[in-house]
Length: 189
Image (cartoon, rainbow, N blue to C red):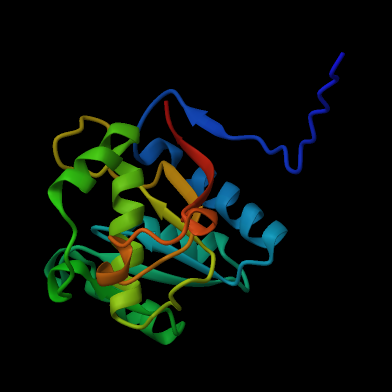
């Protein structure tokens, strides 16, 4: 008779939000900060379209380096951009960065959630800009997005992942290193 022994290396809670969007922003930021500290991760990358999530991160992330990736400069609050600059928080805008990301991949990540897809986007943008190192774990934070979602905006998704520039992102490494998404911290259900 053969007896199987199950060994759990890590057991962590994943938070699944019943609602999408802005209502989850502060909790998402707190969960992401907590997980980054537990893992000793020094960098957080977050999406912020108009600045709401970036402003909340300034309030919540004490002594934790974060990078903000927006969509376009014109939609971001100018006072907040100055504040982020004064606080030495790097900000990049995806429409100002050239990166490739096949639509089939975007759609596959959207099947998990819009925030999962955006986490991939912002990590590629930040890596392309040299704001985060490739191949080192970060916490990525994004949301459902304000466009096309009644309750969208803010943050509702956080992942622990390994960022790559878009040229490397699409390459599949050897089997032992294929897990670029290390953990789901939270996401909408």
